[in-house]
Length: 94
Image (cartoon, rainbow, N blue to C red; front, side, top):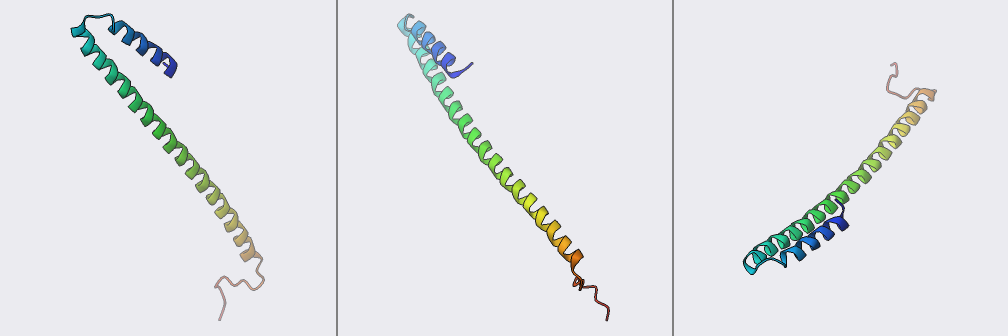
């Protein structure tokens, strides 16, 4: 059920409640208000979760970018060491 459908049905429910006798009307109106409030809280929670997930996705993208850059640098430095004619890797004979 999307937001528009929920609001439409809630409005229909409230209109139906208004046709009831006073004793039942107050109790059901209170329940309808609580339902609307809970719905708003759930929407806020879902929005907050979506923002957190988006932030996490962005963080993961940055980490993957950094990992790939580190791998490229590592490969480049290994090639430099392999091409070093002095072989300054610490394996000098004395």
